[in-house]
Length: 369
Image (cartoon, rainbow, N blue to C red; front, side):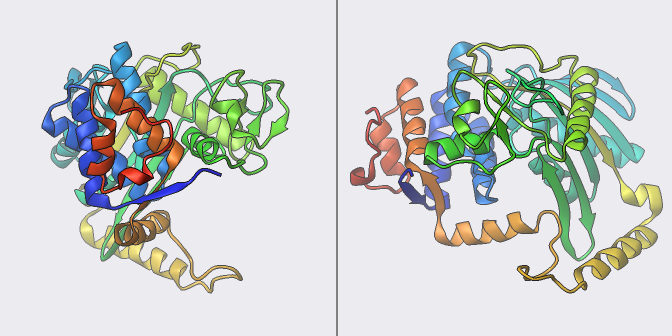
C-alpha cells in the first residue's frame, strides 16, 4: 500500500494553481482548474481531483487540450443553446456554459444547453451545485470521448465511457440535493487511485482482458485492457447509452466508442437541462411540497449500521468539513506523478512540493527535480 501525505487546503490549492499556470494558463484559468480539482478532493471524490493533473498536462503537451480557450456559441435559439468548448479546460468552458444556461433560464423559465468538444469537465456535481446556488434545478447527461472503458451489459469488452448522470435540486432552508454518479459501478479514476495505493477494487466492478471477473485495478490503468462494469446490470448500461446519445451524439456530435490509442486528452459532451422552479410552479407550492417530502424521509428511523437517513450530497458535505479541518489525503504515488508532470513543463518539482507545505524529507522517491 502506498504511503499517504496530508496536505492543507490553502497551500495545496496554491501549488496546483502554479502547476496549471506552468502549462501556459492565465491566472484566472489556473485558479478555476485548481479550485475545481481540489474541491473534488475536499468532497471525497479523489478520482476527479488533483490526480487528473498529470493527464491534463500530458494532453496540453500533445495538443489535445487548449489553454485559455473559451466556449463558443454555435446556435442560439431562445431556450436552446448549442456551444463548442474548443477543447478547452472543462473547468472553464463548463462554468461558462452553465452561466449561459442559468441566465437563459432566468429569462425564459428553462434552458437546454448542448456543450460539445469540452476537455474533461471534472466532477459534474460542480455544475449542478452552480445551478442550485442560482435557485435552479438542473439535469446533466455526459459522455466521454476517449478510449472506451466500460463494458455494456453482457459484453466482454469495453464499449463506452463512464458516462455520468447528475441532477441538482435546491431545497429551501436545507442544503441542496446533488445526485452525481458514473454509470459504471465505480468511476474510472477510482481504479487509478486504487492502483496507485496498491489496493484492490471491490468485487463486481471489473473484468480482465478475457472478460473474466477481477479485483485488480491494473486492467483499466495499463494495457492489456479490461473494462469496468455498469452499475445495476442493464439499468446502468441503459443509462450510459442514454448519456452517449444525449450528451454525445446530440449535444456534441461526438460519441466515445472510438479507440484513442495512448492519447491523454479526455473530451466530454454534456446536455444540460436548466429549470427555474419558481417560473414553473411559483415559490409557495414548489417549496412547500418539496419540504414536506424531504422532511418525511429524514424522519424515518435509520436501520442498523446507519446514523440517519442521508440525501444525495450529504456525504460530500461531511467530507468537506473533515478535510478542511484535518487536511487532504494524497497517496505518494499520485503526488509523485503530479511532481513529475510539473517537471515536464519546466517547473521545479521540489519547490512545488515545498510550496504545498511539505518538507523535503517527505518528497516521494523517484520524483524529478
